Length: 142
Image 1 (cartoon, rainbow, N blue to C red):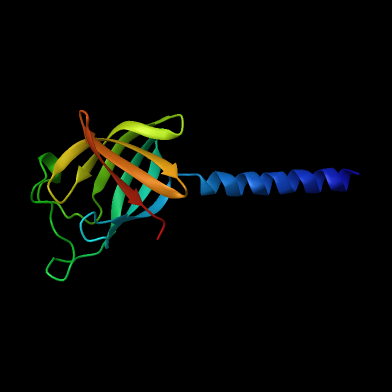
Image 2: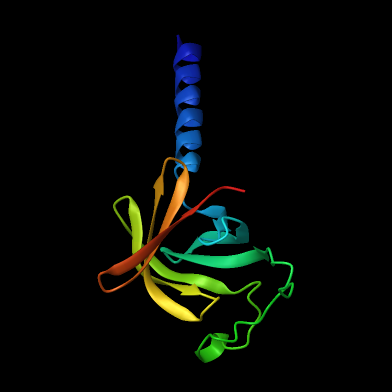
C-alpha cells in the first residue's frame, strides 16, 4: 500500500514539475523581426530579486549588418554598447499570469517602452507600449 502511495506522489510531483517548466517565461526565447519574419536574436529571460530581466545572448545579423552592432541610438550607459549581452528587459514584476510594470529596450532605435509579457499557447507575448499605443511581438522557443 505504501509503495502505491509513493508511486502516486512521485508521479504527481513529476507532472507538476513538467507543467511548471512548460508554463514558465524564464528561459531562452527567439525574437522574430516584425517586418521580415526572420529570427533576430535569442533573449535569455531570468528572474533576479523577484523581478524579470532579459538579455540578448545571440544576434542574427542581416547580410549587410555587423555581427555584433553597437546600440548607437541608445541613451545613457547603453549608448554605443554592444547589443550582444545587452539587458533589454528590466524590472518586470509578477501580476497574476503576466509580468509587467517594467521596461523593454528596442536596440534598433534606442527607444525604451513600458512592457508586459505573458504566455499564450507556449509562445511568449511581449508587449511594448507608450500610453495607449502598443505593439505586441510573439517570441518562440528556439
